[in-house]
Length: 484
Image 1: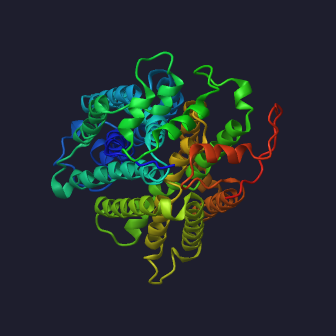
Image 2 (image 1 turned 180 degrees about the horizontal axis):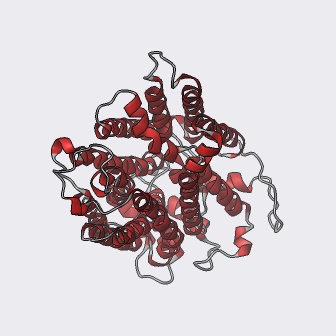
Image 3 (image 1 turned 120 degrees about the vertical axis):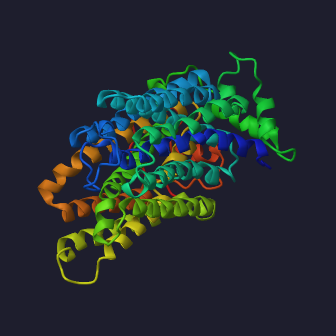
């Protein structure tokens, strides 16, 4: 079967992933914003060039400003999938850009911390809804050959957003007379979020979703699929496969009977595991500790150092997208997990044995961070977001994506809130070793249970879940290792 993506696939992907850039901007906002938001400037003793009335957050309030995004993302992820299942992927993405922009605007006009936190929660709400829908939309309009690259572009765009905030954060320092205060930094997110809503008005709906709703709408899935494929493509065969995948759909909600199907509960379990290992790889801890490591390595400006590291992360994320359909998902996840384990292990050794040693090893933590971020960018960063809609039947895709995204937010919140307590109980070196253990387990999980999806059709992937399963099996079964 010949299936080739038309230019409309790439245009629709670019439009949808304006939302991913917005998500990255929201994630990267706190670090540069706190330079001009906190009442005490921890970067300089000279605050005379900044209007003190704009420094309205205490240290504790600054913590809540950062964490509030995750709270909003949890609820956004929870409701984003069901909304996209009812309205459609396209209309949902048009809608999701609006609350994000409203949240940014609310932060800009805020006169107290409560309003800032409210704005951050709303931004998180929009971010969570985007994360639960945009990857699904792109996977559903893609071909098997382009699905890996286009799906991984979601993480690339998030990284672009983070890098943009780090870049503007350079101008939030005393050296540049605080050109970009926290108010102006908040406005940066308005442009891509409104761009998402505007451009998605011109894009086609997901053919898979149209087939699900074929008796309730006037739009024909055949015409939409034709817009997304070249003239050489075998539309009839592809459409037949899509209809077979959705033939058992009876409602927008996932019934308990459907959840017991091996292709549903296995994909659901694997999706939760992917999100768990993504967050418990320690990514938030590494980002949190990055500035201190750069200071100890001799960087005179933490903001410039952060921008450099974010740029390196962007490069490796793009590299991961390029090689994903060449090496496959499993190999990259294994490589990523091994890189995580090695870098965190050595970082723990550094803080346990070498931190106060009078040696010339100050570059060790910098190298560890580069290796870690590079490993994350080619594997555990983008691949979970890509694989979840890949391995999930279209009948359950919105449900699974929504729950998995919410679970991701919960894990992120747990990791962020528990870091200080774990450090107090174990000290920083053993904390890094603890997360090394999670990374090692992620490699074992990938080897034993995760199927390869590179170059496979949705039908091929689902058949691997049904393999060796009785046709009318209704009882729970154990998750067996899935071979490549």
